[in-house]
Image (cartoon, rainbow, N blue to C red; front, side, top):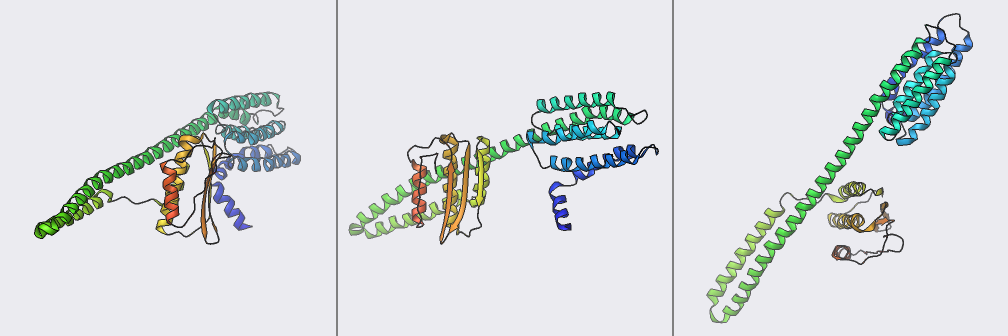
Length: 351
């Protein structure tokens, strides 16, 4: 039991618990004046008992689903204010939850409705002064608390968008750098291999007539090869593959920026560097194709072990079809080189 309570507290955090301090108002109003009946007190306790599940539940929801506990809190406040003005604080909780429910326009609409309901309940409440002053204070706090939560929710949404954009810029920068390295290697090795080929042919022709000159040409070939190896190392220095897990995270960011819902199901599998690199490149190419060509709204990736095989599956609900370009052909070659198989179907989306 204590373990479950600890897990619950860990999942919800301290914030919902701290807010419970405001329940002191309906409790105190339910006790005073002392000539009030015990029914009033126990009715207040019962309403708080109904409120608590709604309160904690609201922290587990997101978006428009938060409106469900908002409605429940407002109903409890309307009922409670018929005998305890302190239960008007339920409207404050409801406004705080509504501020995080969907867009700012929707949140403000709900907060205004809550304010109207609270004022109406206040006017109809039989609670005498000074008990009704708590309901009056709640009527002032509902728009204030609502405004604070709306602004906070907007700030969080803006920061989330900025974070996604920043991550996408970083990913594109990495891709651009890799493409630059690829071009540099192509230019470097193209020139170097051409020189090696020419000097090797020249040396072969000089062997019968001038062995000394042929040896000199081969020495130059050796020097060119060493210099090329050094340049290649300088070009790729600092570059490291980020692995399959890194590609999964990059895939999620890329698809999220393209408004594609991405679901991952990854089993714990042990892979060598070559196998992991091949699957990572395959995943990257598949995600790139989804973003560029698929017109999909949902994509799923799974990695699982079946016997001695490790299987990566990437599927989308896009338009399917299309021919294999250089990227998919490269995947097929890499997987085949490791003794694996590459399969592609395009009847219902692409898999």
